[in-house]
Length: 134
Image (tube, rainbow, N blue to C red; front, top):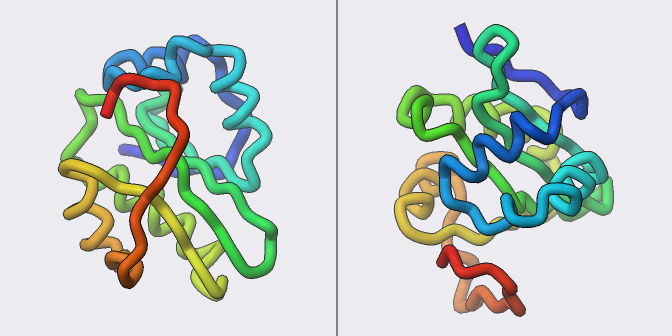
């Protein structure tokens, strides 16, 4: 049984395991990654007993706008609805916000559409990015 929690009680080794398993470049900056997650407005985690199997974070002004930078599930647990459970938890908290924003690519686009997100008009995602995993 997967348990979804809003907690910042996480260990760096557990976080890095998930990020490396998904080949995310932020795993190469473990201290920065952990600090980023711990300083998020919200951190939602997924647990299989005492094993961290997924997480998502939100950055927000606390009133109008929320941005979801990371939603990541360990590959062994993908396709089991865990990402949807995490997004449901975010919706409990942020559904009344004026704007919810994220950047999606690849297979994530269809997932986020199922969660109710749609392309934002004629906008284009833009970034200065130091990773190599896209």
